[in-house]
Length: 314
Image (tube, rainbow, N blue to C red; front, top):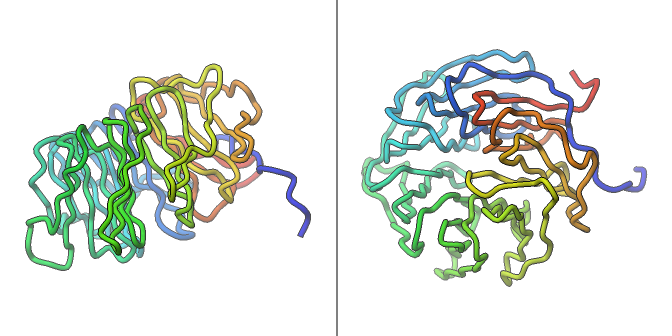
């Protein structure tokens, strides 16, 4: 194998635009593994399933009465969960399009949902400042646990093998160690809109409303690197930074419709700097394909979802 020449360039060639949503698109999630499917959720109260390779819509899931803000896909791609303005969490069968379960109890919109590894438990985080854990194997519709430590809206959740990580408008990232029964709160100092851990859970990215992305040590809460740029602006909307291919880069959309990339190690902006404007409005969601180094997706308030690949890749 040839020696590494630094981070691979970002997939910036527009492959297709998915534009059936009416109004802002808040979330776009890839199916797990090598599967090439995308689920999107939007202001139009729908979740839509797409084949991004040929740019076609496969199915529409329409039970929400309010906007869809979050989607999580189960490990085997047979089910997904969605949440939003309904104050409820919906569990869906992908193939039939039927709502399997609906969990109520939050007192405000549900900003984030995430499955555990085997999709036996679902976590939901809300504007009501709580996280609720739902047992999907039980017939009960009562949460098995409620986490009430946040002092303001919970914007983001990640459920790992042994921990649950949450980010809140109160400026904290909280890590609940499920084995030890311990909580550690990292004070970031700015409203947290997204938290994305590395595959080994030793570090995580925190996106905040001060136009800064921070790489944090998950064990100590110490900041290891920060990512900023002249022109990168995230001050009013929930945006999401993620790791690029092989976790060598940091990728994020901004309120100006641009997609930025930084070198993870030195924090330098990768070219082009500044990047071109590729959406007409804020890019609220960015996601890299889980296994394909040459594909990513962005979702925007302009009503479109765009799939990006390397030039020449079909």
